[in-house]
Image 1 (cartoon, one colour):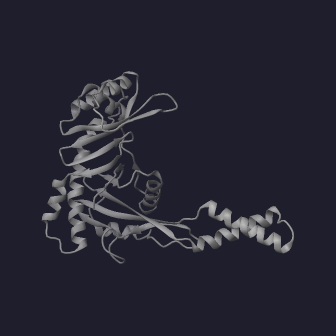
Image 2 (cartoon, one colour; image 1 turned 90 degrees about the vertical axis):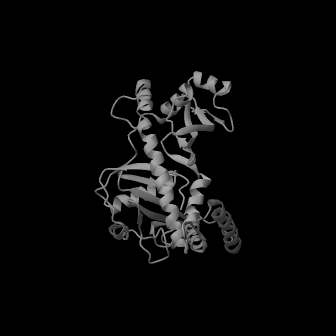
Image 3 (cartoon, rainbow, N blue to C red; image 1 turned 90 degrees about the horizontal axis):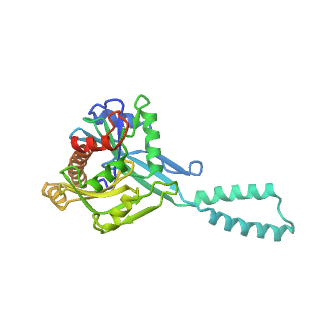
Length: 314
């Protein structure tokens, strides 16, 4: 259980560390398989264990849960191809061209038939709640899945407001790190980043395995480009890409953390899963705690001075 991406959210209401009660709440939105009437479904499934297991797992004040999204995949090209074959067959048999309404009905019938025969594709999205920090961390940066998860949580917990953290401009912070060479002591900058210009076209330049102190990077920064994605290493424990919305992608954990997980006696897949979850959650929460002071907006107008103040706080 290792999150490879993290989208953090701030919760408006505290969540009690009660995995059993949390599981019972999620049970009002269980996952059900796709059907002809519902070509796409989303709901909660057990994060550990099979059918019938609890819908939430708790450890170290963290509550883990899992959203499952299933969709029957049917391309418009496949429907169009079959429709053309059917039209040709009917026109040859009846000796006439079908009208627009007949073609539309035929297409709808054909779509329903093909959808019923299509194979479903499933995706699991894991998320965890840090009950100490009132924080939701989701293992995806894909807007489609984030919207589904937040939508279902809003139905389960209507009193809860889930929103992104109030931030100063993350690109401004990361750009300041690069231009001033001042950033938290716990991180080091890796060798890749993405710069974007400020005009409406948002032209981007990606640097991979490149010295970020090079003249090429410096020239673009002097021209007003900002850092919209930056690779960092944190305390030798994990590496990731910080994105312009303060999400994190391509997370890689140090071998030392994974080796620690192997040292624990784990007889079953569930026990190994639980061990990995504890070590992973400790690492990512400490990492975010380190970075937040640099990016959080204290209510002041974002500016270079605010960014520099945030650096000093960190």
